[in-house]
Image (tube, rainbow, N blue to C red; front, side, top):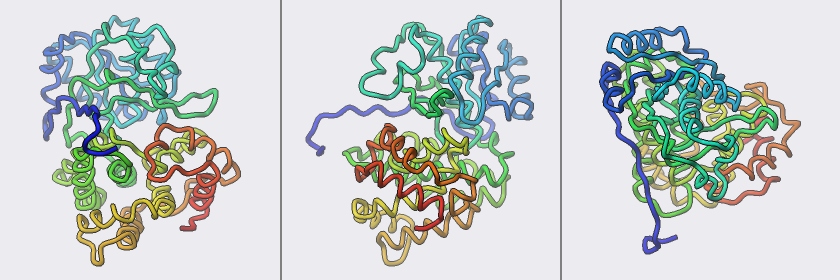
Length: 388
């Protein structure tokens, strides 16, 4: 695809960004005619002060709301179905998506499925499945991220696990984009260092894979490059000092930039990570962080020219693939990312199955090299053993 070919680009939603921005939530609900939204978060946040405080803020602002928090770390179709039942039972007129990627993804799926008469798997990101979606009765969504990682607050999809088949599926529709992304860096202050590192590196993978994905999308490339630059500069600070709001703010904007950029595509890191997460329940961002260098090494022949620009962006000596790769390994080490999947207690005995699942994942289409299932299995084995 060249600059002369016809294509269609769609970029994100209204974003309200800054420390203290959460205080505007009642006002924004009313602007979208939300008088009784369902507040959706994950089970780990239900009793957290940022949740209870936000619920109190809504009620004090005259917005009646109820909280649904039956969402696990890798949200399932059962979580979405339970949330949909709560939405319908409560007569809610909107959804507030609050949390990390799991809470945001579940909330967006609940809102979208409230207007559908097909089951959730009918909207898997395959072909033009999205055209089956009905959009005339969808409730508005306001998304508030509490991590700087997935960027789901500006995304048009949700990753939902099928418990029966042990697969992660990407549920996609343009109308899943929240009406408003309310990004308050103060909501991420309580995130512990290991989760700050894992979610932040997830954002870096989004930027990196989007930049390396084939195709012509200069706006995505620009977003991806600037996102990488900010993460390189600010993620170590955010990990080291959780109260560093300048670092937290830059990481939050970089996460949104990464999710905006990956409209261009993702790649093999996500293809393997989705399979591993579905089978072993690993944290998505951490799995991406561990797997990344093994996929990058396998993609070397297709991305060497791209790495010259990335190296200059990172101000590395002798710009090129080797410099970026060495920096990548060092960066992971600096923020405490494990080197192998074995350290996440992931065995290598299902490598062939991982490979077969990886080539079927929609993200595989964005990899710079169309690897075979066998190659993905080999990459997975190396990641398990820690052999670059």
